[in-house]
Length: 108
Image (cartoon, rainbow, N blue to C red; front, side, top):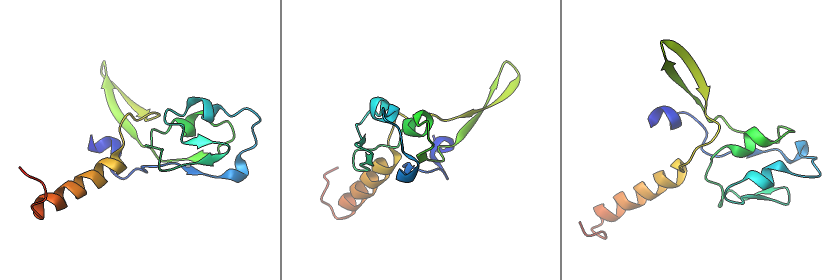
């Protein structure tokens, strides 16, 4: 799991100056509807990275990382193009839970 997240960006960056599509593919593929009307709502975004790979004008950037795999004796480096979890919110939730346990606000 760490190989998928450690030292990689958790959210995309959006450069509106690059955005000039009449029909936006990103609006169609974003699973959380975080990108609408040429605006990125990071409160809805969970960092899957789909926007980076579908935008034809490179309006989105994000270092989502890659994974080294060995398949049938051959080594492959596979870029991560879609994540199905939200590490940023998971980290925040874990810290909140830890604080609640320390303050005895969460019953074990």
